[in-house]
Length: 132
Image 1 (cartoon, rainbow, N blue to C red):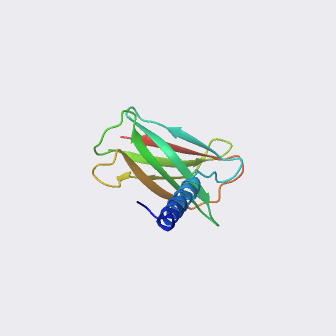
Image 2 (image 1 turned 180 degrees about the vertical axis):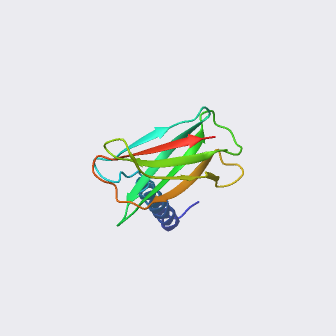
Image 3 (image 1 turned 90 degrees about the vertical axis):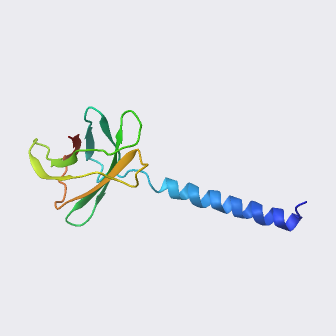
């Protein structure tokens, strides 16, 4: 039989754990670089770009995201992720590519990180495409 003190301690620890994990998940929401910037995701035939986060800094922006299979299963995710900042007139202002990396061998998705060394002008948008 559990005493009242043991029950209180275990309930308090359980509530604290739920509160800590709940606020941690809320902090991982995708961010927009600014109100006018939109993110265009271009999927390949078997893979799609998901969970993109854009963070502006002074003089550059960072882009984080994941690539996952349209039909979930394990295995390598080949190809590269092309990231382009496109101005309001349609010109490419900055571009880079990166290779997605799986977190472990059992992962069904891969993550990517990139940095564009430019301040995004108003009206620009970001195009993220997976290519083989």
